[in-house]
Amino acid sequence: MILLEAVTTNSWDTLCGICARMLADGASLTGMSYGAFTLLCFGLLLPSAAILFLVSACTSLSGGKPAKIVAKICLALGSVSLAAVVGLLAYALICGSTWAGAT
Image (cartoon, rainbow, N blue to C red):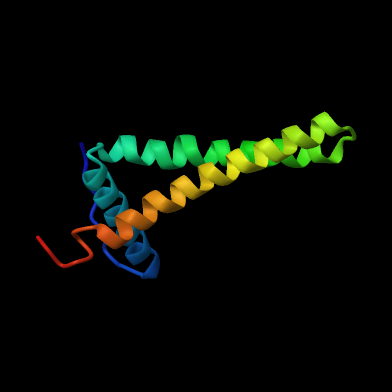
């Protein structure tokens, strides 16, 4: 395996470092591995929220009462999925040991 060192750092490197620390903290706080936590947030919950919002928008444009009910259900489930991601990341940000300066 070849390890590459960053020769220069800029604000994007700092942002990536903050995001990586937040994901690592979230993984350790929930007892999951880093990969599993990342997959849960960005591989399952966020895509499902996007798909549910898309289905909600498409079905709300079609006529009929059943389509409107399906649109509202999809909108509610998409909102719950998005809130779960935001909640997990906020929990990692607020309760993370890295942010408190602990080692």
